[in-house]
Image (cartoon, rainbow, N blue to C red; front, side):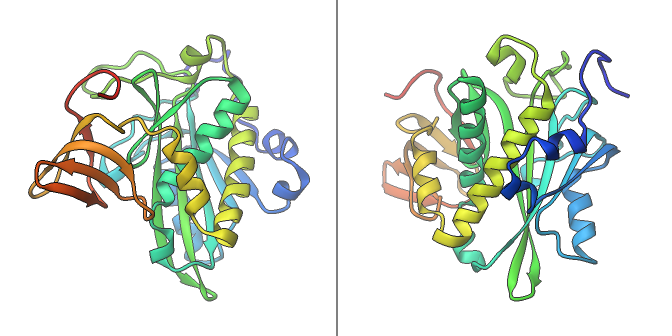
Length: 272
């Protein structure tokens, strides 16, 4: 059930008809009432067909997840839960940093539509005003027809209800608060999908470099003290990302490039 009946439901036909013709020709949009996870739906469909261009959105996720198996709080009718299947000609080594590139695509689309400034927290989070607004979950599937299928999962807080602190353990915000007015999720979905389709096509053609450069312009962590979990954890000052999307950390022993893990700020405030 949608939490607030004044909220406009997602409509596949409305979203599709709002897309430019070139994008609409590539994407097939499917909106469902409730699923365990939109990523899971796309992945299951990919077992029997190509998932390229297949979009699954849901009003509610009952088993939404983020990186490293964490749960993603997914109340009904409040946010945008979306997964897009895409086929790349590139090998997996050239897709390193894809979650960062997708984050940059989302930030640019939202900035263009709503004129707000978003920052990106390595490796896959969108932030507004030091609070998490959304995240990206990339799942690599097997090879198909000489290419590699990928599921691009996106979660954006649009009009989040108040939630217990144990449900979301980090500061968060949503688009309605950031923009200062109600948000119709249908044009939001269309704008996001159009940017993703164009951006992923560009990566297939030209590689990751351009989008990693755009990510750098919104780097939330650069110049700030961080710790990246791991064995052992890496502590130091964040110094941007390399050409593969790995986080560069200046430690007391020199520079370290970290390709996996979760980065946390050790101090609040702007860069030192």
